[in-house]
Amino acid sequence: MRAVLDASALAKRYVQEPGSDEVEGILMQTSALGLCVVCMPEIVSALSRLRRERVLSVVQYRQAKHALAVDIGEATVLHLTPSVIARAVALLETNVLRALDSLHVACAIEWGAELFVSADHRQFAAAENAGLPSRFVGRPSGGSER
Figure (tube, rainbow, N blue to C red):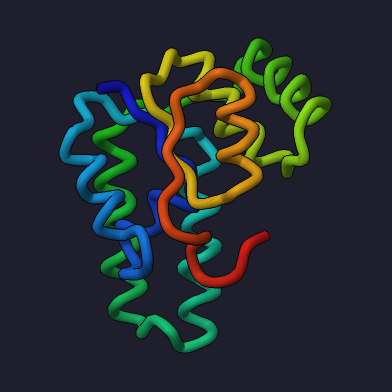
């Protein structure tokens, strides 16, 4: 199965929280993992915040960041092409959605993902509205709904 995980879902692989086990199960069923090019900076941002808030130790932060780098290296990185940007704009015009969240959904659609996974309710709804087979996991990484 070709799956795209948004940063909110993939972050659950590096920080144990509601939905982490579900993400691991999905990844075990995935034959090809696609990740939007902005996924790594988004997750590092969340991990850095958790480190600053002392939720993660420096060692835990480094381990999580290393594991993320390994996963990114094994995934197909989905780039921001003109067609991805055009699709992201269309998603923004028809959904309540943040700009970066629209890029993940647009990348998944353009790549032909068979499953899109998110922990963000609005992004999940936008993916479903676009006809993308989608799955919601837990709640957003590191805290409350955006």
